[in-house]
Length: 409
Ligand code: ADP
Image 1 (tube, rainbow, N blue to C red):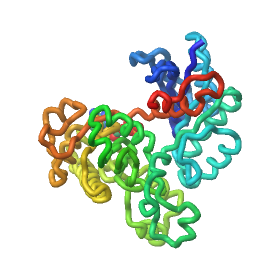
Image 2 (tube, rainbow, N blue to C red):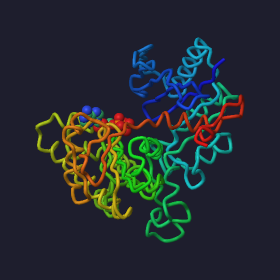
Image 3 (tube, rainbow, N blue to C red):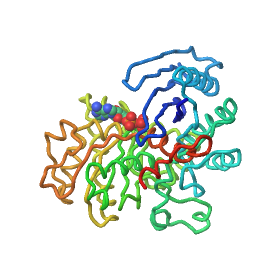
């Protein structure tokens, strides 16, 4: 019987999953991937094989029978049925967990004590952490003997120097954990692990990665390690995003509380769901829709997004003391050639020179041969990163197979 690992990435209205085997080989192999989305409205289940062909689809009327827990039970049952048909034994489940707090800077085998600690970080990421943790309980209930591994979005940034982590707030708040953590770490870690295949010299130098999706952030990486990023205490800081404003003056919060008499729930909704590209355009949080719109507010939203990327790039390059490579990743970064062109145009001062044709064709290298900074499009794969970490953590626990670090040695 072959071994396999499943990966779960659960949000407020969706649960993404994938299944990998070939744990004893250097490259894990994707077997299935899919998601349940529309949770809370009209849940739909879809699974695809590694050739991107749909192998199963199902839809539910919204009802109490289709809540997170029931849908997770459905998913666990589906995975069990399909892996058994392929004669695969499940040796671990890896979970994306947004916040590891100050406790966890590496993937962590989860038991009840760890779960209790992770639940303490819910106030630090109220819209993500509870949804990330819920499937861990579901798996523990239905498959109590299967090891589960939490992989954190904050962990990659644990290498940030203390001054990059601190707010200039009274010390007691810093001591309590009110500080910058940074997020999208699994994406950055994956990109940092791929860059040496494309540009081994720059990968050992100074790199900025722009993860531009519904959530957006940028990270400064020096010799493969994160030294600064645009997200901070929460995943709301830094760049404007689909529905989040990014960095704003904290006095705006006081103004909303004192002058507009908004309560905390209203402010939370404003900042997490009604701002960013959606708030500025009044049209959509989806970049594709904004690109197709002739409305000047859509143009303004895109232009603000580009401007803020340009400013953050300058700040991160200053932190690095120069730049050897710039990498675009995630939905917008991988697909929006116009946005990449605009960011590169504004970065000529650092030595970036775009190859417009390579950019239109979405080649991995989109900078010209004489560009002082190499510029790349590298698709992110957070699921594979989680699967790989999970393999490393469970290696040797049940049935011996080598951890990835052993392949590198
Ligand atoms: P997340 O995983 O955070 O939900 P993604 O990385 O999937 O986000 O990115 C979603 C964003 O990518 C959306 O704003 C979407 O409009 C944008 N996007 C996807 N394809 C394209 C495209 N071809 N051109 C421009 N934007 C795109």
